[in-house]
Length: 80
Image 1 (cartoon, rainbow, N blue to C red):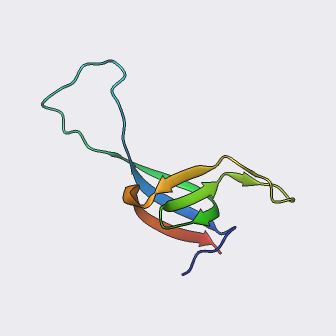
Image 2: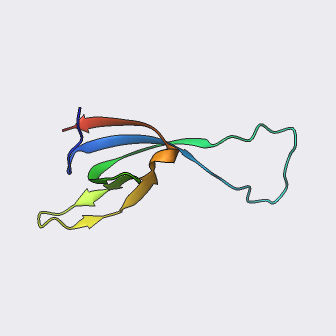
Image 3: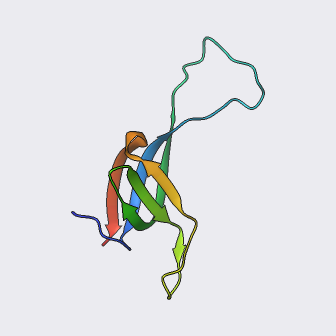
C-alpha cells in the first residue's frame, strides 16, 4: 500500500544506545534496540520518514520524529 500524508503508520527501527554507568562489558552481546513508533506520516523522502505524534485542525503538527531509511526495518500503514 502506498503511504500518503496523514496516514497513521507504524515504523520499526534500530536505535543506538549508550551505557549510562560508563563501564563496558566485553562479554555482553552489544546490539541495537528495536524501537516501534506510531504516528501520522508527515513526509516520505529519499532520506527517510518524518512522522508526528499529533495534528490540529489547521494542519499544525507537534512531536516530529525523523528516521533515516538506513535505520528502518519495517513500515506498516495502520489507518490509510
